[in-house]
Length: 392
Image 1 (cartoon, helix red, strand yellow):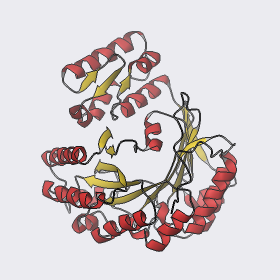
Image 2 (tube, one colour):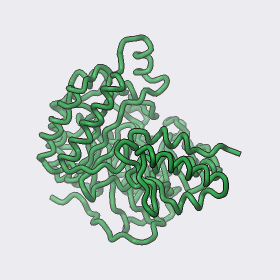
Image 3 (cartoon, helix red, strand yellow):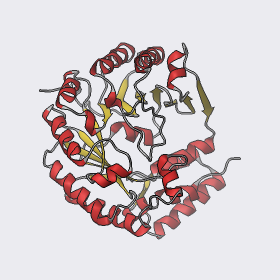
Image 4 (cartoon, rainbow, N blue to C red):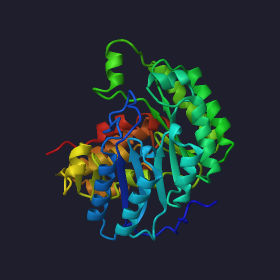
């Protein structure tokens, strides 16, 4: 079976096409750490899909797409019929001849043989992202995940059997009560899965405690405790060693891939490529302006025209965003871009700071770039904050 209709086109010198992101806010259960706009209900979902298709058709003007990403929430809670309706709207509204990558985020409990085989039969998605987070059942209960470790393994097997051979796995570091030994066991169990050869990408994030989440309240009440910084560093080093030994290259602080299988969609976000976001709470970027749809599925579904807000980025905003994202990638900062965005005193000050990071072993300098070292990736956000240009 070949569920994937898109071959990878030759690279071109220009990239004027767009990214499309679709936000599916529905979940079976709210994870304790989640701060994204999501709903634990199926009420109103049909109306939401109707509204999503309307927005796709309203904003699609026949422009060529390169990547498409169904995110959430949990897109795998949708029925195959609902996904098919959304696909039809996309095909009717955009030029699909240049599409390289189409990703759907999923949770293990949804990847039953029937569902994932039906998804493959749509012949639309050529990449599947599976939110495993941990192979430790205690960890999964702590963060309020719905699946268990056994379901996680079975989900990957089901996806591989359906013909998906480009699967990304999500894991998390620094979970409450997680020891370095626990994380080592996660990597061991992941290694057992990777023999399937369908896992081409790994996203491994350090847990971030967002304000007003369930986890934030649990920590404030002393019910849970996060690991020490030393444990996080040990886990990160374990991860780097495991990825190196298993043929995964690090290309961003939290992302590793087999050669040729980087996330093309997310990589373009980090390069500040314009993108369209549809759905409640979805963000869009046209190169100079950001907009975000209302984070209210009911209001979104009822509105003939989607309510949204937007802001025009200043030159300082654009520079700060570029620094923040570029320093988190293995390519780092492009000197020609820096010199385009900055002049005079600002440029001299930034170049002086970058030289200091080189001396400290956090960056390496080539004729065209400043690139983070392995140690530098650990300190990417800190370096970026020191480089930020203050608003005038």
